[in-house]
Image 1 (tube, rainbow, N blue to C red):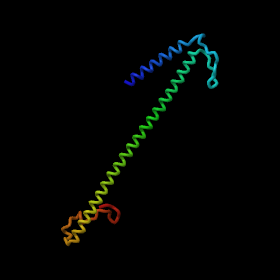
Image 2: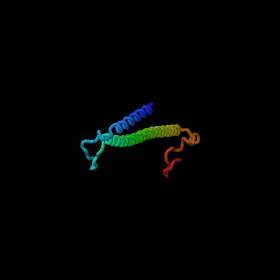
Image 3: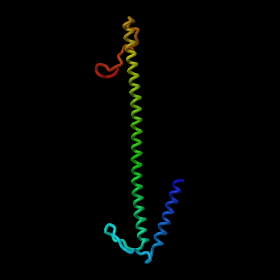
Image 4: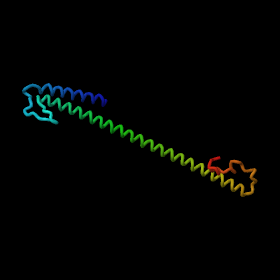
Length: 143
């Protein structure tokens, strides 16, 4: 719907521009005083001047459109980067929680093994997993 409205406004602007240029042509609408822009002397009719104004306005609109498109793209990149950082932090928190849970389980198993051995239960009755240390071995590798 917005695109259709934009096309209608654009068409109306083109019609008004063409009517302005054609309606202000001829000797009756000549510029009384010439003027210069960047060293270029503008002469002719008010219709020609109006046409120059339309061209300058179109170039300005194109520049503004490019500027806004670039800003929109940068904004999308920034929001995507923020989203990725948020997901990375959530994943890091989940992995840290899992690590803490495993450490707690290991400590519980060690405490249970130590209490079982202290109570006089023979070592043969203790499962091998409970008797083996869960941490790194002497050479730095994990079992």
